[in-house]
Image (tube, rainbow, N blue to C red; front, top):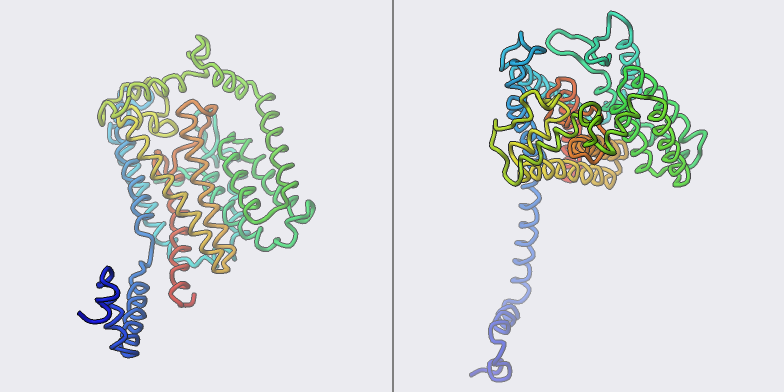
Length: 423
């Protein structure tokens, strides 16, 4: 028995490693150091050029939406309103919308982030002109009492959807350029407040209060993340709440919806303003844990209005059950989480516009999904907002795809910089 085994019998394995290393001397140390460095380089070279999980989450929502739009709309042709349509009409239209959206999204991915920054005021101004144009007789198209669309042949374009994207890039660019004035009411918050008020007035004239709420949340959410004065932001929230309460109080239609939301099962409400909500809740109740099975919804049989658009989540809850709803929530959670992380990485790389734009997309998708699900579940008053990436509607799918493409582009540029490259 040698000395090291005699004095340290309980730790022979570790001592053997130490003994061999000491005998090898500095050569072994250099070899280990070289291996460690080469290992780090191999790990860095395996960094993906894009966020694969984020892409799969986006595509998953689109595919689920395609299936559920077909399931929710297949029986609409049996009713008098869509008697001249085939049972596959909405499926084919939605497939065309998805194809256009993915094609435009691929094109938008190739646009550098700095281009969106440079042209954000132009895009915002152009979108304001479209919001004005949609109110001009003969230009805008009205559906169910609302005038929100401009006919473009293959699809009806909704300028309010473009405004959501324009609000993201305009607010991000504004916050970066006015960084030193964010603690000033006149130079910091007032110009953005005027812009949002102008957009709000045009959207309310359509009317489209849901889009106005999302645009306001995007704009002021980005200002908050950009470092606006806390007192000014608190005052802004108070003004927003008072404005919302005033609009509800002055509008008999909105006031009726609010009262129906408070007690949807009251006889008069259940047959009128609370009709959609009660049937949405019944759909979730029928779904239970695992749902009635794909295509097994009863509420879509002309009981639940707008089952393929605003209330598609209720059909998902009825046919796929609690499990299906949880999967949908998780997919949206993953997209929002990744968007915030991409934005944080961009800010750490000193890319202020890109970071705020990514977080703006997170605010947009997150809040709109939350409002839509909240309405379907009876947590919020009924509001005409679609479920992003899922509901039927060409304009919404198109602009959601452009927003996702910009988000993936920001992440792509982040990864180039982290590898030591240049933009």
